[in-house]
Amino acid sequence: MLKPAMRRYTQGFDCEGMMETQQRTGSLTLIVNGREYRVETPPERPLLWVLREDLRLTGTKYGCGEGECGACTVLVEGEAVRSCRVRAGALGGKRITTIEALAPVGGLHPVQHAFLHQQAFQCGYCTPGMVMAAAGLLQKTPHPTEQQVREGLKGNVCRCGTYPRIVAAAMDAAKGGRS
Ligand code: FES
Ligand code: FES
Image (cartoon, rainbow, N blue to C red; front, side):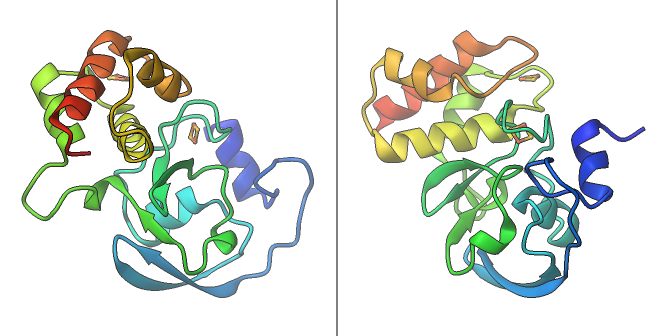
């Protein structure tokens, strides 16, 4: 059975879930991971579904669909955003980065490296969103205090409870100064 947010989308409700809409498909150009994609989609459709279903970039995870868990976090112009809550049609011309292209080919981003070093995951479902949120945070605040890291990541949920390791990893990455 579909989760409520997905069911709402597939039934044709808008991404706020407030009203039923007649969604018209249009042609949209998105710049994802440095590549230009032309997609046929209703502009109201959340970016998350365009990434996962149309572009097959499934590293970005579906958690709540309500902007509450951070599993779907990507970077838009370097800033962490929840892809389940942003309309694809609002992103024309903006640089979107997903977990698949955070690091150079064959390498790891400093945050990914630090997550591995600190073993900051158990099941790993929240990890792409956590890594993207931490990368966005360090881009804005390259040398955060631990409190700033906690604040910056507090909207990202880890059901396995690996928060202390996640914070330690983000601090490690910041100390490396390579965000
Ligand atoms: S799936 Fe987007 S915040 Fe939970
Ligand atoms: S590692 Fe399992 S949800 Fe975070």
